[in-house]
Each structure stands twice: as structure tokens, then as C-alpha cells.
Length: 358
Image 1 (cartoon, rainbow, N blue to C red):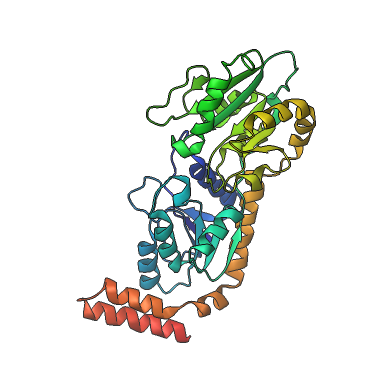
Image 2: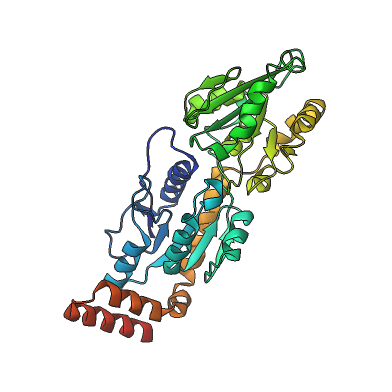
């Protein structure tokens, strides 16, 4: 099987999508799959679109390039689209529509949370078929072996980490916790560490700040703490809380976006209105949450196996999927792309019609 992943992978700390790409590529290769990151092979079985915005460093190819590939080659290549982004999490206004438009090239869509799937369906995305596959962290890197539970004699150490320095990552709450650890009620009971990038203009007066880390270095830093805090808003999923949980830390998580789908049962949720109350409750029930963390399920291995099974399923159903494609959309695209190139256009259109009738 030949699969092209639409990602330009980066070394070091680079956000959750990059970690997903590294994990999936390694897993697919372990299954004997030939993995590519471009559209050079003429006989790809599957193409995974992950980022249709060409100006972003993580993008390897766009939906437009995928359509051109399908027009050029006779091999029955299938297209999957992984959606892990939305306007809501960054306060932007054009991303959702870009993704909806790009999705028209896909035979199958994978969302990283039910919350995100529901959001796009409400906003008009129509896909032939879809599923939700939750993210997972690499258990050979993020694990409980280095974790030392809180002994109740020292301060409770909260930690969070983010690659993206967006304010909606939870900085309304992180600034509040920074103030909290210096307050008379908490200064002898609580510490807070932030690992990662900060929004412009945000500085911590009392929290410990550590620049971005990745891999085992990050895992060891997380394991020095007791409870993982995520206050991210409208987050489709993220990897940060997963990595914290995999290191054994009970979760204190905001009731927002897709994060509760990952955290429920492994910690306590909070809102801006009840944060201190839930923090007190976490302290009171800490031991019971620590015991549960050994069964935290969201590993990269589980995630990658689900992607692999989808790939096998799609290839097995290839003929039926090809037949159900909306060829008229492709004809319109060809007319737009090759207007003024009549001979080339007629040749491609003839090939398209011949294949659709086969």
C-alpha cells in the first residue's frame, strides 16, 4: 500500500499536528506501508490531506494539487481529509470555510473530536463518509515511570504546556493562576509551571516559565509535577493534556471544545466561575485520580491503528467509493483549471468520462 501524508514534518517542539504526523508515519511503515509526503508516485492508494493552506509550513500539498493529481493519473487513488482545526480556537474568520471547500476533494473525512465534527456539520460541511479518531501520545516517550505522586507535605505543583502562544490557549486562566499562587490563601499550597510559547505581552510574575521542550525532555519535566492543567478554549483536541495524562498526572480541564472527550474520567472539569472550587476538590480527591491514570487510553498506538484500519477499509471498498464520486464537480474543476488549453482539457475530460463509465 502507498500512502501520501500531506504534512511537512518538523523536528523538535512543533505542536500536536506535527507529533501526529511523526507517529502515523512510523506506524504505517511498521505495517509495511510505503509512506510519502508528496504527490510524486503515480499509483498512490491513499492521499491524506491535512493542511490545505499552502502558506503554512506544515502543508505539503493542497486540495487543488490533489484534484490535479487525480486528473493526471488513471490509478484509482482515494482521498482522506483529517480536520483538526477551526476558527473558534484562534478567533479567525476564514479557516472553517477554507476547510469546507477543501473537503470537496475527499472521499472520507476524519475529525479529531465529536465536538469538531458537530461544529463543521452545523456549518455546512457535507462529506460522503466520516468518523472521529481521537489523538494519542507516544507511550514510549510519555509514560508514568518517572512520575512521583504528591505526598501532601509539599506544595501541589500544577503544570501546563503549549507550543502555540495564542491567548485562547487558556491564558485568561493561566494569568489568574499566576496571581493565585502568590495570594495568602494559596502561596504555601500551590506552585504553577508553564512550558512553551507565550502570547505577546503576557508575562508571569509568580509562575515558573520554561521555554518549549519536546520528546523525553518534555516528558521528564511534566513528570516532576502533580496535576496537569489545561484551560484552552474551543480546542478541537490538542496533544498537551494527553501528554500530561500519559505521564501520570490527573487532569484539571476546562469545559470547552473537544477536550472533555479526552479528559472525562481522568480528572475534574472546571469553568472560569468555579475554578478554585474544583482545584480544592482535586486536592481532596487527588489519590483516587492518580490511581485511574494507569488506564488512560489515548495512546498514539491506538490512534494509529484506527487510522490504519480506516485505510484498509477504504482500499477494500475502493471500487464502490470511486463509483460514488461526484464527477460533475471534477469536470467543473477541470474547466476552470485548463481554460484556454483546449487540447489538454479535452484529453483529460475524455479520460475522466471513460473512467467514470468503467
